[in-house]
Amino acid sequence: MNGTAGTVGTRAERAVLGGLGGARGELLELYRDLHRHPEPGMREHRTAGKAAEALRAAGLDVVAGIGGTGVVGVLANGDGPVVMARADMDALPVRERTGLPYASTVTVTGDDGVGQPMMHACGHDMHVACLVGCARLLSGARDEWRGTFLALFQPSEENGEGADAMIADGLTSRVPHPDVVLAQHVLPYPAGYVGTRAGSFLSAADSLRITVHGRGGHGSMPQATVDPVVLAAMIVVRLQTVVSRETAMTTPAAVTVGSLHAGTGPNVIPDRAVLEVNVRSYDESSRTRVLAAIERMVRAECAASGSPREPEFERLFALPPTVNDEAVTRRVAEAFAAHFGPDAHTAELQSASEDMSRIPEAFGVPFTYWGIGGTDPGLYARAAAAGTVAEDVPVNHSPHFAPVPEPTLDTGVRALTVATLAWLGTASA
Image 1: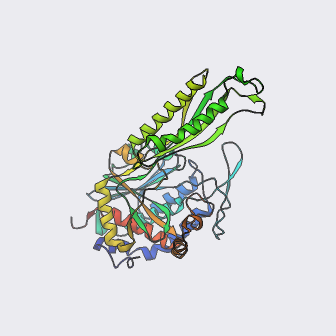
Image 2: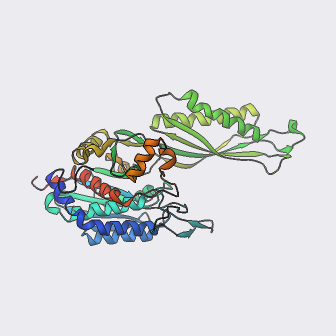
Image 3: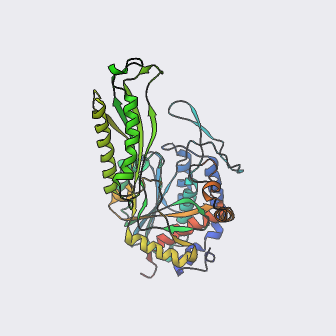
């Protein structure tokens, strides 16, 4: 990394980040504690309590219980811009296999009454610790900046519910109106890496359940039936052409049939088949075009098979594309370049999806979302040299995924702080 906090960047950065050394131990312990105690979406009561407690201890006003477990810390420090930074809090139903001394052994009861192992397999524990650290440092150096800082801790990102829940519960009227929203995510790059990208960054995600209808009957008399298994198979094959033949090579997209269920026995032709389809795209235009093509093809295959009923389409899941504002991203990228030097990069497109953009959309303000690395740099370098990054570097949602605490935590705190200070007013303004 480019030097240490206190020796690089603007005067305000040096003053604010000068407190990082004194806070590092408590932030590391907070991270490990959160990692040991993961919680599912909309049930992050302990995590939200820890965040609220840390914010109050740092002198922020806290608005809790927004959308269930959402928390916002408000640090008002005179006239000036209002900057919101967001972290997500929820964990995943994954059994941890990292072998870490602070690994999760938590099991929770799911909605179906069955116990589920839980793990912070996506780095949200690190996101919480970094945002707490940023708030703490800004509060400890109020003479260096002017404006208002909002630290927002969001529930249930993994299920795509949390942002909407906070908005529906009056988020935009319960906290000051921001001028800009900032967010970051741990990615499987070397720890110390910081990557920004203007424009499209994360994909949109749409999941559909499609039910197609046939006419059931005996396997020995197919002529008396309309076989929905054959119909579903034709749909699976035809959907592969949405990307290969109806999408430009310069427009990334993916269509996946992840589930297909039909029938109960080998000699019974069923009366329906159910397909579950996932779509990834990077802008609203291609998203709309791909979804429309899927519906058109399904209806056409049903007509070609003589299906007795129209197909049924159910939207299971929908997340918007994350499209970073050009001007906001440029300002943050310039601040990162000055502060992190060669560790500041232009990030690649990411195929994961997020609901974070719904928050700035609800406020009607621009945003930028960037990535930080969380992989042990030595492990990553060895894998890169061997050409085995895909095999040897655990990715988000893997049971082996866990950011190395340092320098990931320092990098995340510094990135949030530097980006925030790029927007807040200066003490002399």
